[in-house]
Length: 323
Image (cartoon, rainbow, N blue to C red):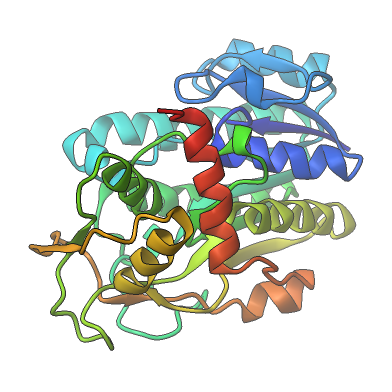
């Protein structure tokens, strides 16, 4: 198999590239470098710079690299931005995927792995969240991911393409400091930023119906996310009729208060008491994955714990913020 990984120079994508090339898979990366960095990639992995909205570009890359499988990770992924700019998100995430699938069908690609999100579930009132939990996204980002799952599944059924959609929960950590997330959009880097600036970390609401009143989430190490991609890609190769939708999580809930406590312990910034502020609109009290199906289907289980996630993320943060 020759795999094309879109968004392969980004945070998640570069870890998937590392996992797949480390396992001997042949890979070419497509990335527009709007948020990715070329220096995240191994020197021997070809990088084609361009967008999935450019059909001529895709046709050339698929032909020149004899691509037979695609791992599609490229997407816009900031929830608040999606609310402010829904048309931009539909263009990038839905129209971009449509163009890519059209090119894939024309090129005879037979395997397609789609990067989805737990955002497709919205605010599920169940614990744990299984793949059969009804999808009811509450923001345009989640809507684009659900629409993407539908599109991938329909194309797979019609054109005999083996497909899988992986629904990530809360991703954190880094395989190496150089590959760490450089965005400040998720809880871990947000707390890092405030602690290193000498400011108290923020807790958005402490009156939820949870043991300590703060939101509970399922955090998954990025290396586990990457290994799940490798396992799914190999399953698609082994089963040309596969049509999978799978959660990627640890199946363990961690509250915001618990998370901040571990972050402060790892970073040594234990002198700042978290500041309680108002709830953010749309935050569900508890979202924890069931990881039973992915274990049954791919024999995959998360290996890394919470402290490993935070320690590896902190090493990356200090590399990028030496002062």
